[in-house]
Image 1 (cartoon, protein in one colour):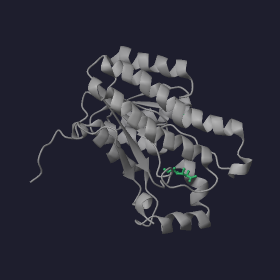
Image 2: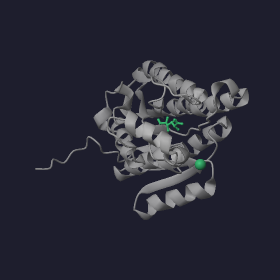
Image 3: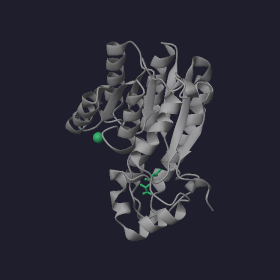
Image 4: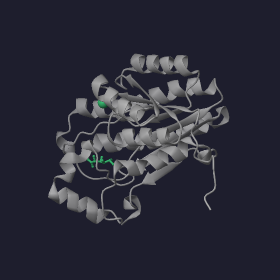
Length: 257
Ligand code: GCO
Ligand code: CA
């Protein structure tokens, strides 16, 4: 017999998801909306973003958009203030926006290293700090950072991405210990290889595709939709005592030898 449960009910919770125009971010936003959340999707491109907001709204979900570049601190803070002004509070932040840059380390340009760290780490810190400031004023909330199975394990040509995502794991712990007593939980989701636009070039590369499939015990790429449940769990009452945690969704890649 199915039991009615509120464990995964996000009704009444306003959640901002960055990098939500596509891929993992959109999948997490959709899953949270399907569990009752009001989702505020962020992306850089207003038109792309509006189309995805419309898609969720057309399905009957409570969805809205806030277009800004996550590395623009003023724009990000203004968006948070608009969300709080509209809805009284922000419950959740999914700091998911990220960029990738693939160059062998000896040729990896400094400015590209800085750009990747700025987007994948520093922007998550700024948004997390600003969101947490507002969360503590209205009884708490939940922050989820999208990290990666890359970090504990590494592969060639993505040094900036690995450094930034590993730093984001550590930042997740650092913020969890400081904010726990203020009612704000801070966790991370660590995807494995997911069939997203960011990875199209990899999927179409037969050698890389074979490496991923061979290196992943579950023997395939993840679909973006398979990342949604982790976000719902960490945003929901089911995760009420979970903080400082990295939830891997990687088909056991990170524990395979
Ligand atoms: C790469 C990929 C990875 C993964 C991501 C999964 O170049 O190896 O883009 O970065 O997509 O890290 O967590
Ligand atoms: Ca975008």
